[in-house]
Image 1 (cartoon, rainbow, N blue to C red):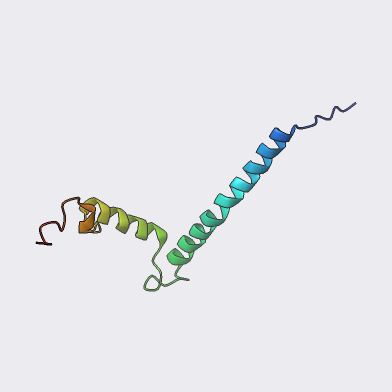
Image 2: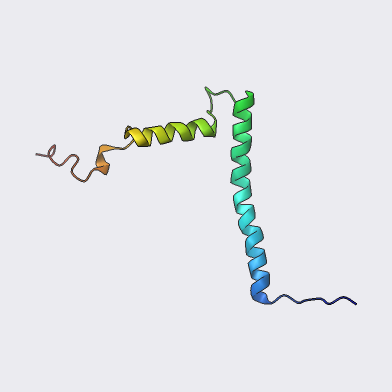
Length: 83
């Protein structure tokens, strides 16, 4: 004898949300993985499009060294130049 359990509306909605939420994350992650694989194997030339890992490392190093922050991020930047 089997007992079928009927899911309530909130439980069905939660299960649907988990599937949709997983799908929303899967596509960008798959794209990044394919991009990384293509860059590392030479299918995508690094002169055309660098690997996402090298882009992330470069971005992080620029943030740490403050070379990519515009001067407008500083609250006092440019105030003396107007006069």
